[in-house]
Length: 277
Image (cartoon, helix red, strand yellow):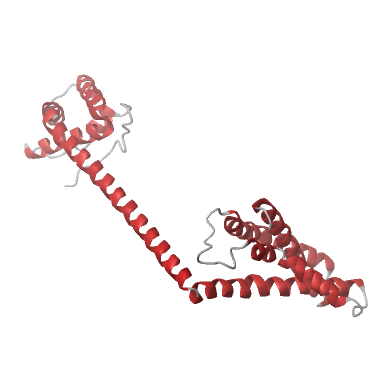
């Protein structure tokens, strides 16, 4: 009956018309309650922003349903048809037309006539969008065995796909963790001599800091080229562990972080890490 682009355009126009009718009824009600016009327009300015946000969210959800290429016709043989969709999106205009016809020969002024049109729009839109459409969708699924079967199969398929994705993500995570563990084991053997040298620099009683910094920087650059920051971090931990095993404890200042500051992505978190007594 209608193309998807036409349905989207009609639905947008119908929603705008619906919100205009809502705004008209609210403004008129406030004015009749004795609120001055400048206060009404001040409130309507803030309300317009809220209404715009709500319309944007609503249209996003509705457009996805209208423009979706996967119409569940087996589950909803009535509400997925073009005729029903056309009726759904034109409901605000039909309600306004009904209100217009209902006010002929009854209204006594333009204000009352516009109020009748607005109320007809609100009533018809609320009835169809909030009551009739959800009820029809539920009845289609409940009363039709084919709909129930198709829905159950679709949900089962979606659950199986979701579980398959979770298993694949778990497998990939396990591979990454195993790879990291293997790299650490390989680095442990490869970095052992460098860790010994760093430990000697940390535990020496007398040390030339300039020479120690150059040697430590060379070791850090080599570790960076081997495996990046992860390799440097493991080397630092190994050197500190060797210091602890020798009974010297950690130095009052983490010299390794200071010496390596600026190598690759290594950054010194603090220049004053004091050891606990």
